[in-house]
Image (cartoon, rainbow, N blue to C red; front, side):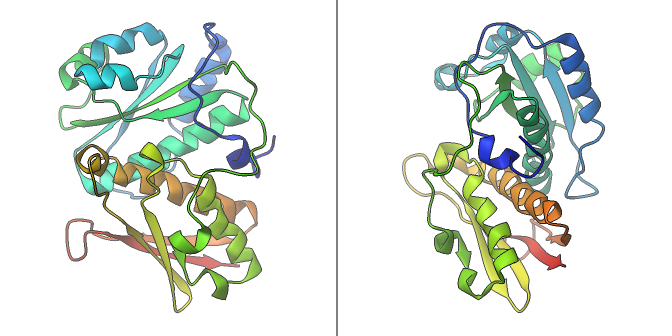
Length: 261
């Protein structure tokens, strides 16, 4: 597996071996916490490693969250302010850690279970201003990671408008959207090709699960953006991404991306 094709090996793993990963791998992972690159310079966030996965049970809130938890030997808990830009950034930096773990042949799974902020503060020194959290389960998968050629996803033209007008290189980059995970496979990202730039939007969920998914849309769009930018970098393309003020104007508008060869 290489830095280029990790997105094709990554999948949401829900069954893990019980053994812990080696201490040296845990320490190397902690070092990655300082190396992640935020998509928004002013975004606040923190990352915590749950070395004993059994601890997570005490932080779950509500019966539904207990069923949502994926049992794993380890977890990452990412926290930030309950702010649209911060949450968008949390998805972006979290997927960087997913990449690192995938390259170590470890399985991962984003989890949207509700966590008790009070319990989290008993486990970690969580910043007082942080009232949003998201979890990534990880460990040695029962079944080894394999290259995935086909995923259950929307067609590329459903999520990227103007796809057929792109260059072959930009089409390859755009298709990395089809490897990104999202809550309940909602795939809330939409790109519009507009005069040489990619305008990035999110779509808000509808239906019975809309309220539960709404808080996770910003996480998901951050994850997908990392797949796009990382794929572009793997091809030697420079990327410019301008994050919009997610509190003003069209709140579904995430930002503008420009690819420079």
